[in-house]
Each structure stands twice: as C-alpha cells, then as structure tokens.
Image (tube, rainbow, N blue to C red; front, side, top):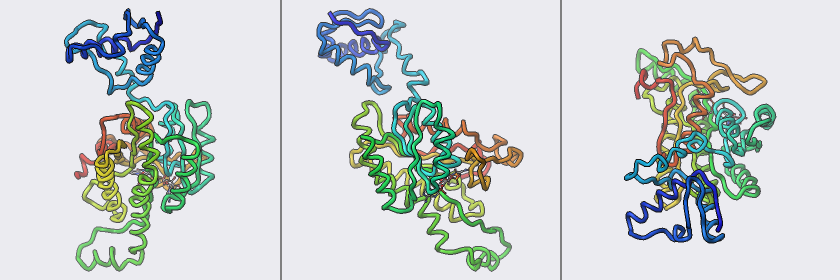
Length: 366
Ligand SMILES: NC(=O)c1ccc[n+]([C@@H]2O[C@H](COP(=O)([O-])OP(=O)(O)OC[C@H]3O[C@@H](n4cnc5c(N)ncnc54)[C@H](OP(=O)(O)O)[C@@H]3O)[C@@H](O)[C@H]2O)c1
C-alpha cells in the first residue's frame, strides 16, 4: 500500500468521476487507486504513485476540472483561485530589455520579488549593476545584468547565446526598451506654418524617425524572433504554461493626436500592430508563445521625468496630472506590477493590448 498526500485530491476525484461520466470507463491511473480520503490517496503501486505526484506537481488551471453535477463542498476548485497560483512566476526565467530605469525596472521588480530569475539588459552597465545591487537583495528571485544594445542584431544574438548557455528555456520576454526623441509644435494657423514646423524645421529628419522606429519597433521584432526557440522550449518543458512576450507599447500609439512627437506615436502604433501580427504568425505555425502588449499612460521614468535618482527611480509630480487624467495622478509602480503579472501569467491572453492609463484614453479618445 502506498500513500500520497495532496491538497489537490479533490481535483483528481472530480477528474475521475467526469471521465467515468463521459466514457463509462475509468482513467488508467484510477485503476491503481485503492482509496481517496480527503487529501490522502492510497495507491497499489509505486510507479502509479510517482505518476500521481507528477500530475499534482504540474496541476495547472488548464487541468482544473471539477464535477459540475456535484454540490459536495469537497468537489470545489478553490485552490486554483489563490493569488499564489493565479499570478505564479516563481522559478520562471525572464528577460527584461531596457531594465535600468522606469517601466523596465518596475517589470523587473514585479517578477524578481515574486521568485523569477530575471536577466536585465540595457546599454549602460552602471545602471544595470545598480539595479541588481539595489533591488536584487533579500528577494526570492534574482536579477542578472547583461549589457546589450538591442538595436544591433549581433548584440541580440550574443545575448541569446549567453542566456541559452545558462538556461534550458526562457519563460518570459518583456520587450520594454524604447526611446522618445524630439518634440515639435504641431499647432499652426496655416498650411505654410504647419510645413515650417514639421518639414522645414531642421530637427525634423528621416534619421530621427528611423532611430525611433529602430528602437521601438524593429528591435522588438528581431528580439522576439531571436528568442523564439528558447521561448517555445519553455512551453514544451513546463506543462500548463505557455511562454510569453509582453511588449511595452503606449497609449500614444492609440490616441489620434501626435502629442507633439509624431514619430514616437507612429512607432508605438506600429508596435501595437506588431504585437498582434507576431501573436498571429507564431500561432499559425503551431507554436505556443503568447504575445501581448501593455500600453501605459504616464509612469515616472527617465523618459517622462528627464532623469532618475541614485536608486534609478524617477519622480513625476502628481499635481501635474490633476484634472488631466481621470485618476488625477501618474501611474504607480504597483499599477505596472499588476499589469506585468497579469499579462505574463494569464494563459488565455494572446494578441491583446491592455491600456493601463488611469483612464487617459477615455478623455483623449482613441
Ligand atoms: N514612462 C511612460 O510614461 C511610458 C508611457 C508609455 C510607454 N512607455 C514605454 O515604456 C518603455 C520604457 O520607457 P521608460 O518610460 O521606462 O523610459 P526610460 O526610463 O528612458 O527607460 C528606457 C530604457 O530603455 C533602455 N534602452 C534605450 N535604448 C536601448 C537600446 N538601444 N538597447 C538597450 N536598451 C535601451 C534605456 O537604457 P540605456 O539608455 O542604458 O540603454 C532605459 O533604461 C518604452 O518603450 C516607452 O516607450 C513609457
């Protein structure tokens, strides 16, 4: 007689009863179970016991079947609703690009504090080391810096090799790195004035548009394509989990105005479309890697505040947003953490863009 003890015994019982209901037959494992009492299962072979334990270890929301025809309190699937299950990133391997400051740093903390091993990249080694030192102590996960300019294919490939040499798969990719460059006066009272501001202005260049597009769109495409084999491996080795890519796009890609930086807004709209296109191209090839995006409103970062402090964090005064956004404030780190954990762990989310903007797009319109 062999015994295993598991809080998921009720799931197994329900699974077996459903199987019998549907097919009139029991499951192969069930034939070896001699009794189930609460969380205690008795089994007549060690081999089957090992199989059972494996089932419980990989028990996932997708496997959570419960007997709909029973109102027996022991036939519930309540454990599936625990935060630690719904938003579980413990032990996951992640890569966050542009993680030295702002939203990338928030994403890194959200994952690492909750037990993920997070590789962070950016061009400035000092920023990355500071993040690893300041935020990597006394947490369940790890933060590991890799210097990389993600606008260069050979550097992306080198980063892939470095991670692939240490990890058997990549569970989470956050394409966050991005830039915003020049701003322009778009308001004009005549066609001539509009041309002067947006064409004759010597800061309005093809090069500027190319730089923004290269960093915000092209790299996102190449980084995802480069890491695809490691991401697909994650889905294959983690039962009940599909690897995921979360692109940090922007509500700037959704609103119809240029917000004085037309090149940035056009690039973010392209990145939103790229998200859906990548999700489609990946799934149509039978691969199981989800691609979603978070479109933030205003969050404190070097991009929005101009700089960051010794802890790599930036500050945007709340007063600046009173009356300008329904939330009357910029986004908090916690708002971004929730969005990251949601897009990363929700196995049924694919090809979507989630706006986290304090209601900004309600006011501005899309
Ligand atoms: N903050 C907001 O309100 C807001 C709103 C909507 C969307 N976003 C998006 O959020 C993302 C993060 O921006 P942020 O606001 O957090 O600004 P940020 O503080 O300036 O962070 C951007 C990060 O990207 C890195 N980066 C830039 N170019 C890179 C490159 N070629 N290779 C590798 N890393 C690079 C930068 O580090 P290095 O310079 O050291 O490389 C920096 O750490 C961007 O995609 C941005 O468009 C931000």
